[in-house]
Structure formats: structure tokens, C-alpha cells
Length: 42
Image (cartoon, rainbow, N blue to C red; front, side, top):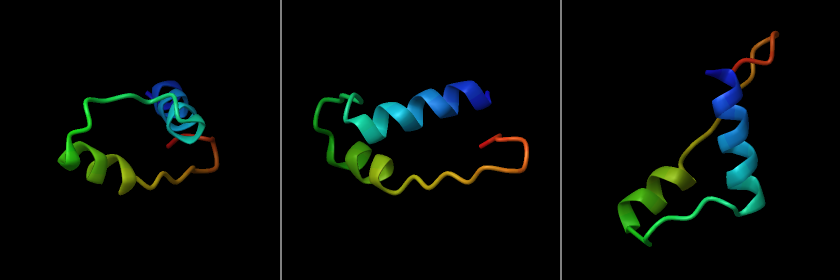
């Protein structure tokens, strides 16, 4: 799953993540904080 999280994080930072403008989803996406462990896992 770490690869998925890396791709999702990269898409979010690059502005490639698209959604229908749902305010609840916008709030959720803006509240995501990822932390990497020593192996690079999210």
C-alpha cells in the first residue's frame, strides 16, 4: 500500500487530484497528513 500512498501524495501536491467540488471531500483531502517511517512507508 505504500506505493499507492506515495502516488496519491504526489498527485495531491501536483494538483492532479480531481473531484466534483464536494466540500466534505475537499475538507478531507486538505486534512490529510502523511508520515513516513524508517522504511519509507506511509
